[in-house]
Image 1: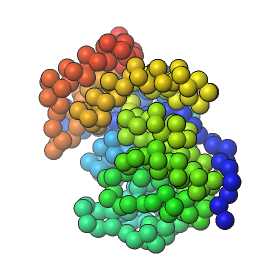
Image 2: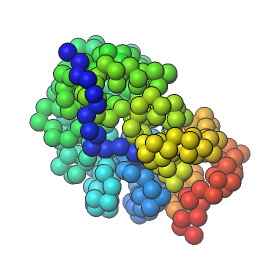
Image 3: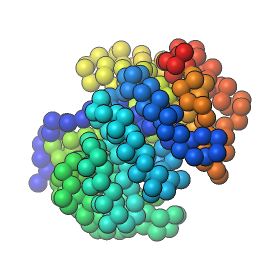
Image 4: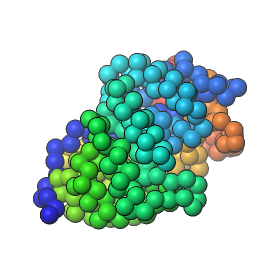
Length: 311
């Protein structure tokens, strides 16, 4: 039987995905990584998400993941909660990663359903068992990342049932098409098993998702000073102010989502002098100079903190 009302959320608000900072040789730049983290926190993010797809986790070795996690957790030092992405096709490896993240101090882990490439998927029963195994012995919440990248269709009814069957799976980052409709259905079916219905995909659907009941978002790291107040105002009941904030920042949100992707945050941070290099690892190409210039122009017109924080 479905429960009737939402449980009290431990975490709400705007969590920024921390990009992974490399140097010109493609090696980890840990000093730049720390400056990136300091900016995100001081710009107002309610928390961080690390080792995510937008962090280029798919281009990192296991050793580099460990180095980054240790460096970031030590540098954050409890200033904000940190969500660690621990996705892996293997339930065993994902469970090991998740327990390791919890020991380091993660507030939550974010996990995609298991997939590999374009064709290797798990059935619904396999996905449910995957999350049961990851949750076994884990004492922090799991955020299920429902994203097109996995190519695994998960209905709202399936997600709601999973939340009831595996109580640790109580946060949901919904970033598929018609996300607001799916969030509404998930909340209706899941009741108080759904602790955190969240937005994703660089805030391109943020306001619609807040209207549908979202209480947080995994967002970009380039302008937390613009995004965090939108969620804060909406959750405080200041809908009109939140709408005005969203309308103001929407050109930059759209440009990040549709033109720049995961390179946007690093391009802005380099332009602002926070980091020295905005490169991704090969084979991800650099932004076209005209595209980068367009991004920076919009951010400058908004007086985004990223362009003046390090000055």
